[in-house]
Length: 400
Ligand code: AMP
View 1: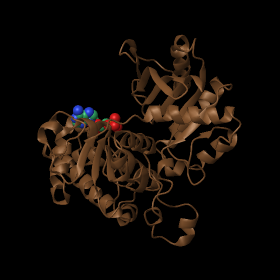
View 2: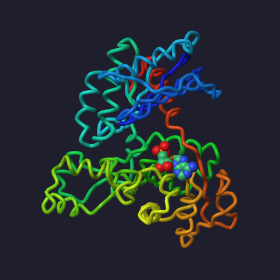
View 3: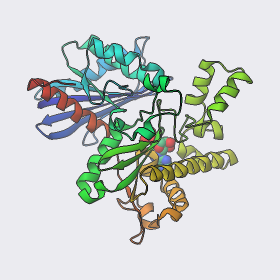
């Protein structure tokens, strides 16, 4: 495929986009942009791949805010697509449910199905689908592709996928799906590029960002993962609780009188680092704070991540490599050290200098487990998956 692809990552409070030029297998980043603060004062930043600033401004958006933003994206990219026409938009979509284990061309039927999955991702799925619908309205001529965060995990071990609840619910699709699949796809490809030998080994990939999860990976495939049917499960996160005793949820309903809406808000927006610290969901704020609750929130985060890393190792009956990625994993030497120190018993020995320097390999030579930092790139995966679907369509193959 030749031309340009727009990759879109629409969250509940931000919207990121990237424009890629595509020539066959070659993907070149042209432009990156982000709308932040969608729930307060929207702010737009756009840069060329070289770093040259194109826009950095607060926006006054009306009620049709999202439509306005998407129209602006099309205006911004016009001069960059003159010689390489825009061929398609790739959307990051949280949940593909049981039906989609690969990227798919979006049409009415696909959208209808994806709508039914909103309860499995009430924070992200509506924002993802809202952008899809608006794009279809603004540019009905343009093919749009959904790339799913669940797809990477589609073949996880059945023992990890099935919840121990009555079969009739499991058979209806209440099961572990797992998320952050675009990030794990990228890391799996990088591991393969770095060394085939390494890619075949048992790796635990720690995607530690505002949303945090782990993936137990072997041979470029997911074996187990910490998030569940929804992206609320697993590790403690910025504002999400991660896994808690289901009995706690029942108690909060029965004794505290919380409604389903109260609970949803509490578990998605008001828990995790924010809930425990009472200060911020952002790890940088907590690291900079002298408040004891900030330190306690960090300690819980590290404890939760370490415990789950060991559980991913148990799912693979061993672990040969640990990979850190995403905002915290890529940038916070302090958190990596706290986690690695707690994993000494399993064979992790950190190279302190390499860790401070955010080096590619941060384990000491004698470490039984190799520890790496691999910066993730979900958007390039979006662009590649989108181009593949469009290319297959051009060659008359089924796109789904
Ligand atoms: P992400 O969701 O991947 O963008 O990651 C966001 C998280 O990464 C936030 O909690 C940030 O505080 C954290 N983060 C980003 N840079 C750093 C850094 N240099 N040190 C510590 N945490 C960081």
